[in-house]
Length: 286
Image (cartoon, rainbow, N blue to C red):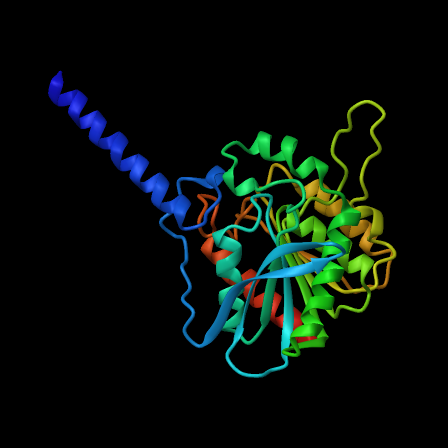
């Protein structure tokens, strides 16, 4: 019995060590444990750092990465997942910087709270995400564009927007808000309104702007996603067809929600590799 208790204690200590180590590395607590497939990108050949973006009287945190040199570099603005500005999003900035982009990801939850320290997804939604408005997000992204101009190293004539999960929805909506960006890529972001409670007004969703959209948006979605279903995608495609933006959606039949998130069990390398290629081709063609 003592031996069994000792073994259990050692296992708990190891789990606690891993938990604290990963948390210290910057991943959101709600996504633990981290999958072995998680990609870690170094800073060789690039510059990466935390910055502050002025938004009115506030300064919101952001993370940026770009190639070494004076530029100006094409811009990739990244809208984070529901898990906020955690290590995966920072790593994406470094990855895209190595591909030649000035990549920047603002903390779009800054006013409402730090979701990276919240362990349960329902709490993230109730305490933070539900209080973040589309108007706030668009305003913060506008401020990000202004900040990029102040750096003198960003090519404001070549701005692309991308986002993942919650940030995928934000990407569709920002593409409608700012017709000056060249293109956008939305990764498995919600498309249609969810169930509403009482007399609460439903917030604007991508399907609401699909017909009038001007910026070409590439949607990348998973066929096994039970949250954003194939039916939702078909509804969105039907409305997109009524417009003239040239937007399209690619559905990966064997991929689930979050298939590009290499730190999660839903990661699908085949779908991710193809989707990344589609994204880069989309940016190049626009």
